[in-house]
Length: 178
Image (cartoon, rainbow, N blue to C red):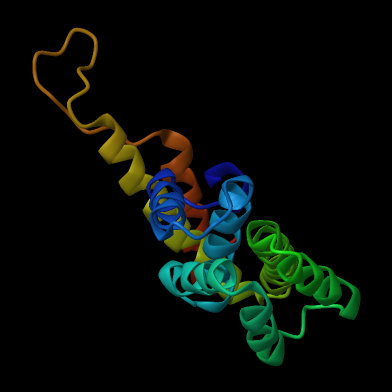
């Protein structure tokens, strides 16, 4: 999930954990839902937990939640709605929920990608600084307790590529060309 969303490992793990803990996200949609939640947070600022709650609602009541979300998001086609409704009417609530969640996740992933692509120069540079700082923090957490060869004391290590990415982003915010 982290690799496909640009999120840190920690953020990806937390999003996946929230999706699992909800108990309402179809097992086959866990990665897709976690990715959508992370991308929504990155592109719109909507929290991961709020997005997971929307998917949880789709899991509880696929038809009702789909109609409600469609009022604000306009993502649902008439054909997909009919399929969700038919599955629920046939007593296949889990299948209806899985289809509703996949449809919403696909739509939100696509929209988030579009929003991110349409960010201005300053917004992209600031996002780079923010992501670089998150990556540095993740790198430090990953390295706590690791020993450097030949060293007798513990140290925190930040990889050079992460530091370079933060530096490039900071220069871009200041208008300095690399």
